[in-house]
Each structure stands twice: as C-alpha cells, then as structure tokens.
Length: 172
Image (tube, rainbow, N blue to C red; front, side, top):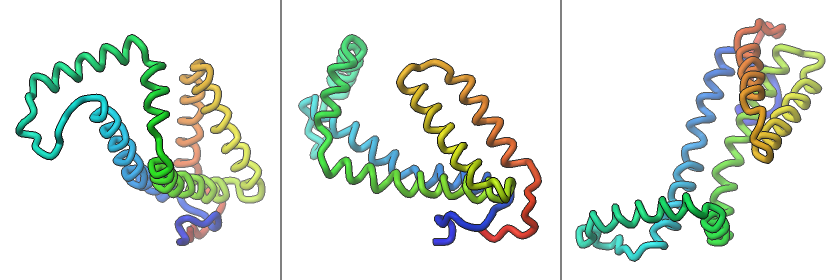
C-alpha cells in the first residue's frame, strides 16, 4: 500500500517507472470500455455470438460500413444512445477500474514534487493538479490550446524527471 500513499519521495527514474506502471493499471479500464462498446454495437445488429460460424462475414462487414456512415452523419444521436445504455453496473465497473489509476498517478506526482520542491511541495502539487484540471476542462469544452497545454505538461514531466531532487534518500 505504500505505493498509493501520499508520503515520502521518489527519484526521477522511479517517477518514470511509476508512470509507465500507471499505463498498465489502466488496462482493465480499457478492456471494460471496449467490452461496453462491443456490447452496444453488437446490440445494433442481429448477430448470434453463440455460433459465429453461422454468420456471414460479408454481411457483418456491410453492417459495419453502414453503421460507420450513420455515425459520421449523426454522431450526436449515437452518443446520446450509447450514454442512455449505460447501466449502474457499467458505471460501477468504470469507476472501479479508473480510480486506482488516478490515485496511483496522483501519488506518483506528489512523491516526485515533494522530492524536488521539499518545503513548497504541497502547494506546488495543488497548483499542478489545478493546472491539469483546468487544461483538461478547456480542451474538452473548447478544443483550443491543446498544443500549448500539451507542451507545458511535457516540459513539467521532463523537468520532474531530470531535475536533481533535494532529498538524499528516496523511500517512497
């Protein structure tokens, strides 16, 4: 559990390894998301998954092409439709899969920022989290500035990775 705690410090190398591990932690979320999409799109067609050999592959390909065209013509309809098919089970599954990833990533950034900035580390961590939330909000709602926010985030990542920390012993 020490890896999920907001305490102690880590080195730049450990920082990168922990960020890579957070990608592995996100695999269950991606599998759940793909399962949800697959179940939704399969419900739109008349397919029997119990006996896939009975299905006509050309018919399935034609269905996929027609569905892609329909989604391209009216994406709002399909977005609203897919959101309406969310059940409490899917929502709980998504939350159970994504919370550990977010918690582990925040703990990773916290440990590294504390190692680099010591006294002001907590304040800088809060500023960093606020910056990330604002940049995501602006990008998702307005779509502009993604390049600038991405470059700033990349610079922060590089800085946190390569700068020498003031902590002499990393035990996080």
